[in-house]
Image 1 (tube, rainbow, N blue to C red):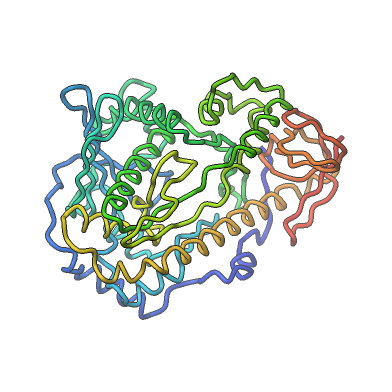
Image 2 (cartoon, one colour):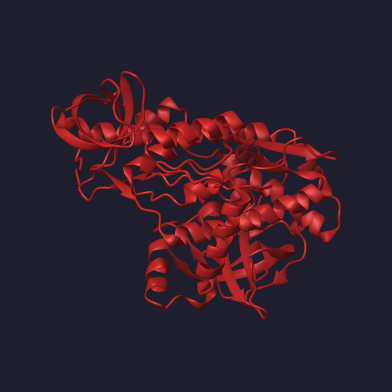
Length: 469
């Protein structure tokens, strides 16, 4: 693993480049402090669910804990999923300073040297976070699932919950592999596999591309690592997707809501992907859908990585679709294979608070609050803008660390996988350290390993240049 020990390797210049806020205004902070002491009564009565042994599963060291889970096996071979979601509406007065600032920010931005949170830390890492051993206001989803993994009933209401343990993905994976999982998630592997099988049959598309992560170096610099996605990652994501799909159904049935949508790729795009598979010498069996074909690939193979990189072209045009009184033409998300809504991360994402209020109202048979209805015309654009910014910031952070890491290695050779190639250049993945870059060269072989030489690094512009060795 190559490490960087650069003095001044911070992200201040990047924060300034994107005009990221450094703090919250005094009015926002004052309102947050007041809400901690005296949460809003408008949230209504709460069920006491503190006796349910919830646990959280998040990255190591996370403090902004949105979700807590408990999965029970029930008679007949089915499951009951209890999913507690942080209730931000208990702390944010509609139209107040907190609300306005959250709409301006849209979502939490994650940088290696510290987050730019959607809400003040006194809420996001304190009073609203589902920290272990603390009684917290939550929106509690209970979803009954049959033995085949299909939901049969959904109930959502406000509650008080108390998480019993805070786990990370690796810890839960290790306990499952050892045959000694925590009772609250002992059924997660079985349900997670069922839901993943259903997702493939629905046509969901999962791109199993390697994830680049930035870790702090003990000496004050930064380390690039490639994080493998374990089974618990995938299974835990399926619980969130199950909840988001249940939320979408509630809203579609009531003809009011805000959905995450993505148009299906046209036949020409699928034909193009088939040609890419053929060029990479990957067999696509007759009668297999895109979802079934991709799910069967080994993500560790270079040719599979190249095809997953190509498949991103099929998943373009994602957006947020709000409606009130008439269903939109598009209500589904092609990547998920069905209707879906964001409701499981309100600490970190603006739209979840509004979508959750709609689901609570519909489930209780009451009118959707006027402040939520009024926001439906604005939230999609606010989320689209914040998604765009978040993607740019994430890419810039990785590009910056790549430049810092590689600056002292100009002229050296590295092993690389060719992901996408044009006539005179290609997108490549260096295997160690995990660096993405552009490589000059004619007709470089997609899906194959080659040797490349680092020819230049521009730290200020966050640019790397490679050529085939």
